[in-house]
Length: 192
Image 1: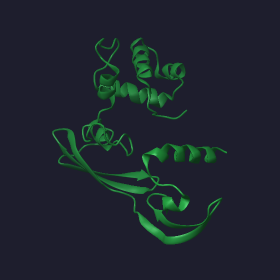
Image 2: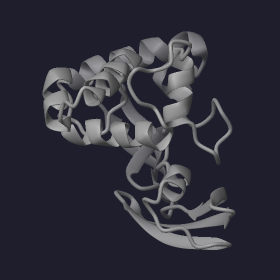
Image 3: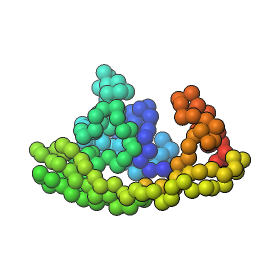
C-alpha cells in the first residue's frame, strides 16, 4: 500500500473516530485499506491541531482539511504538493529548528537539495533551496519517433532526462482545448 497518500475527508473523519474509540493504528489501517504509516501521520497531524473525537459539528470538510494540511510558508491555493513540505517539517519538529536560520539537506531522486529556513519565534518564515542541477545535454538533436519520423529535439536534465520537442512538429499546438486529449492518448499508449 502506498504510504502517506492523501485521504478523503470521510476517511479522515472515520480515522479520528476509530482512534477516539481506542482502535489501534494497525486496525484502522486494515479497516480503511491504507498503510499504517498514513494512519500514524494523519493522527499526528490531528493531535498537533487538537482534533479529537467527537469532532465539532460545525467543522466542515474544508475547515478540517485546512486544519490538518495548511502550511504557514506557502500562500493558500498554490503549489499543491509539488515539492517537499519543508515548512511543516520545521514547524512540527520533523527537522530540528535553529533560530534565526536552519540549514539542512534532503536526499532527493534528482540529487541532494540544500535547504535554508529563516525561523523566528518557533515558526518557519521562509524557505530557500538550491535545486538539483539542470542543463541542456544536446540541442537540436535528431531522433526517430515511431509514426512521426525524424524529430528535432532538445535533450535536457533537471533531476531526470527529458526531451523538449516543438508541438507544431507533431501537428498540434499547446492550448487548453488539446491538453486533455494529448494526456489521455499519451497515458493510454503507455498502458499498452
